[in-house]
Image 1 (cartoon, rainbow, N blue to C red):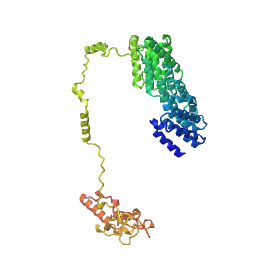
Image 2: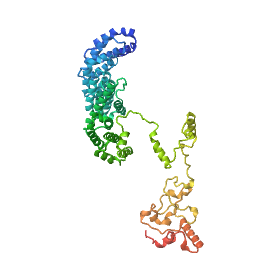
Image 3: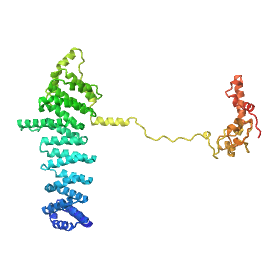
Image 4: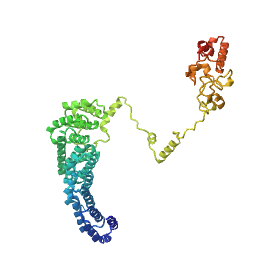
Length: 540
């Protein structure tokens, strides 16, 4: 069977876009498809490859019918694997021959309820290819129903994207499109792209966009906007709504709530104030709500109590944009005629009537009369300073490279310290802080040292280049030195070692120079003579 599968793949490549070569393959492929349908999995694999070959070569109606029949058996099987083969094969057939999708439409829709996630995703791709203007409503309604129970985030993202695309391509009417998109906003608002909301607002603002329709087109647009407002007004009853849907609802009711009837404006205003005061709302979404309230108040030519409370509540908001909206609205509300002129009815698509802002001439003259400074436009030289061509940018880049920058070179290797700072010797013995034999005085640590000598290796430390530590115990005593014999219970009076002689000489020289021995820089208790007086010999 594996050789047969390889041969079928080769035939699919050879017969692609070649009618003459494909005609010579028809009988072979048809016979292979019949013989392979034996009810075992290897046969199913060959039939599946035959279906792919049929869809790749020049089309033949007989082979396409046979392929569609094989796919039907796969889809209606209880095996998840065969269903997957059927959905994949039908997707290949429908890509170039969509007429075969109608007879399997309901069976494919049932595959969305299968517990296999892989089969669900493959079915979603197939439904997207099967949808046409005839079955768009059925397919989209089924996808929206499936979106309610979908849990996987990535599957929900695919569903939301596909539903929005199908609704825009095959919408039978504008009202159906508005209802569908609003339902998608409600079920998966956090997954809907901003472009979808923008397209919906554009449809409400511009209408059908056909100037030749005339009055009938305007009436249709008005009916569409009125029904959209009714849909959004009823949705405010739900406590939890995504921000993207709230922005669309605020804008639509602020612009076209008057189409629901002038008597309903106070009720709409009350609902908008309650919705704009909900907790957990983003500041920009709340700004949409405040703007909608402002527009309704402009149409009512008065400021109701609930609107005044809303404005006062958010006039001290930490969000600058929301705070500015509330403060501006509070100032405009003092003059209802000005508020109605600033916020006209259904003027979202109107251009500015005075692009030169000539209505500000009076304010400009008044400011000049009070001594305000004239506006000084930037000079040509200042404008040229901020205008660069390619050569200027290249020169700037070269100058930036020439300027000093951070250096990433490695530091130089440190040099070894001088030999007289070497604190270790070749023998690895402990350091003995004493004086060399040439410093003057006798040396008690030569040869067979008494108690307190750490090791015999210290005797030659001076000769090996390390520190000479001999004679320390004679200055500090056996207990202070802590050498090898410190714990033996023997305490000897310090003898006059080389270091002791040096200390005595230093003390005498300092005393003679200052005229008094008490002014020496060496404390008296450190002198060996003082220590010898205080210590008493201990019998061995």
